[in-house]
Image (cartoon, rainbow, N blue to C red; front, side, top):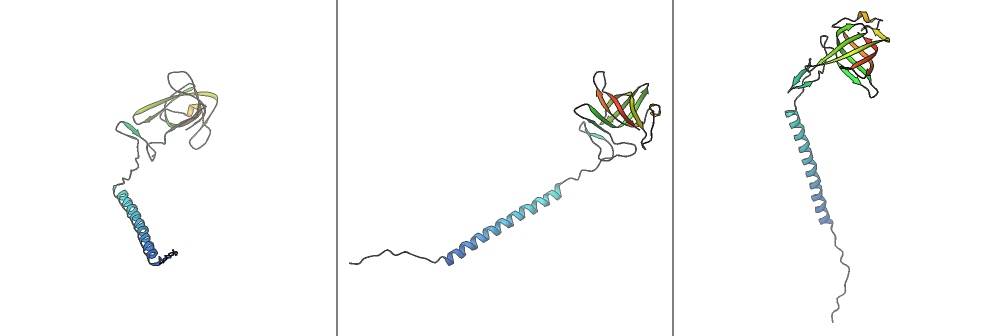
Length: 168
């Protein structure tokens, strides 16, 4: 009688493992090349279809919405308004509309909208010229461009600022 004995079967996968390595290497190479092709295509389309937004020299309106100016010129001063949570306010680039007694009316026109502010002058309000020299309330004339720092006060028909500093 013939007996069959089970012997462990050991095969050499050197040839097959080289084939698997080559196949995996080709997959990696293909994935890298595909990724590079996608990136280069994306850059190409970005360069072709990206629109450069030109800087505007003056404020204009697009579709009825105001567009902020990217640059300022001597005829169009930089305009900004900052209001803190506690009511501290900075208004820069406002044009003087009226100066009467202890009240100065200032205005910022932006996108066709006229923002008017009443500035109450108090005893401790400091006045400076644009060059930093001391000035007085009398030096403020209609048409002057001002920077006002102070506190918002409540009440009244228009926003009112109790000025701590006014600079021409």
